[in-house]
Length: 337
Length: 294
Image (cartoon, rainbow over all chains, first blue to last red; front, side, top):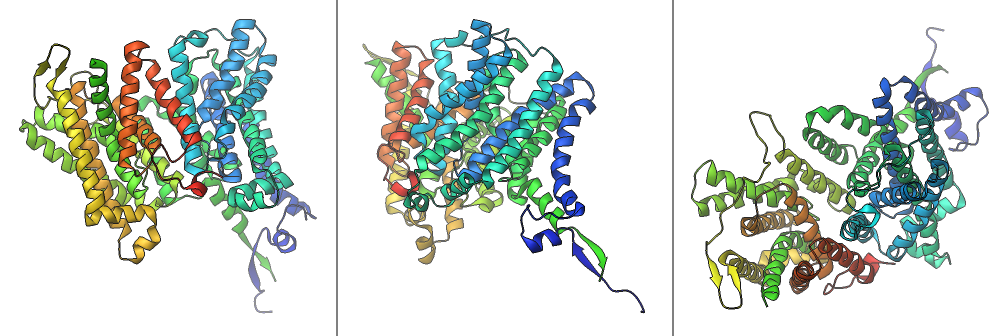
């Protein structure tokens, strides 16, 4: 034996060779290989609020989580169901106004108003967008984009919910930690639940609606009903974010319909990796603190952030997470033959 | 009576705001969301030429129109060309450019740049004067806006119906592959479309801005109004664009005369949503059933 022969082997070779799926896991190494990224995500999200310095950055994390929820719901609708819905601000506004006004006018506690705001908001958003569902692609996008503007102008014109002033003292959370961990857990649950849902039968139908809705229609599936399911799930997530933010900032006003809540999640989704559900959350957790750190630069912040967005669309359209996943799967190490 | 005349003027301003966007989007299917930004940029460049460089009015208008159309071409050549054919990416990219330009104009303190903030930026009107009759009092500039609008409508209509390049642009919108096959260079045509569209945005800026002052917010307003007019009127249809502009102009003027200006936006956004749901291709647009709805 002059020198022993070695070759390069991919870490996931054993798994890929058998099924290409998650299910054939028969050694601790493979379980670890599959589990490491997921456990990493859970750990990072749960530990981050403990590690960041001070109350201010904890609040920034919570805002990042709100954007993450919106980005997840945008990504699920756009990449998995084919409904490009850029009305994130409408979901935030509807959820926020429902839970905030319940607390302000009736004095209900957050434990009641958030679930009511989430469910009721999702029902309201789904009903409002139901007539738009036959629209395709860019037309659906423009319609949903216009809804928050319409809501703002109606509230300003009629003076409903005290118009421009907004409803000011909305009760906060009893404990800061409850507020923080509530949204972190919801982010985690929605990431894993949506990824799971996309692997189920209904997920296949969603993918079919995205790729070729005529074919789905031809196999006797009511696509409007399928789209309503998807829309309800996505608006549930968005309206939770809205209901949360009304209690978190203790204020409900037309600023909940601000265009930031529409643009920022899209930027996060594009940066993080469209179609991967977890990627947009990652993008939001990068972008929101980044833009907060750049707050001192004033308007330069917005400029920088647009430049980043354009650069990602032009030069890395697959996004961060899809790129990282590819690298993780392609990682090779030397083994003896 | 004056409501109708002012409504006509208002409708023409809507038309001027929308014509550049409609030219680019309706004809060559490039959603140029940087339209509002180019509009504002023209205002500021012209102002700087007049006030800082001391150039004569017409010369500074000419130079700034050239600069803006070059900027529009640069946006296409270096950025939009890479995402051609992906509508959502096109929208996001061009909107990001618009945001960067508009917020960049507000930057302060870099290289002694003070940022374009405040009410001091006012463009001079074409012709100072007031027309007063027994039943109406209107300044000359508003009447000239109608003249400019009609001129532009005529020129663009003739251009897209009789000129070689205009016809080529229409061919691209109808069927890009077929247009390529008969020798129309689609990238060059898109460059032309963006150059003309940006120049139209610039003309709109020079015509409309003397009515108020030059400010950054108007960039966003122009964008939403342009989208409103294009969507309601129907893409690629000049008659539809004009009709929608007049409807919106008269509608908002009547609204502000009787109900209060805050109902204007309700009218605009409500109409957009209603028209999109009922008839996505707009009032006079050609229906393309399967592209728009299931």
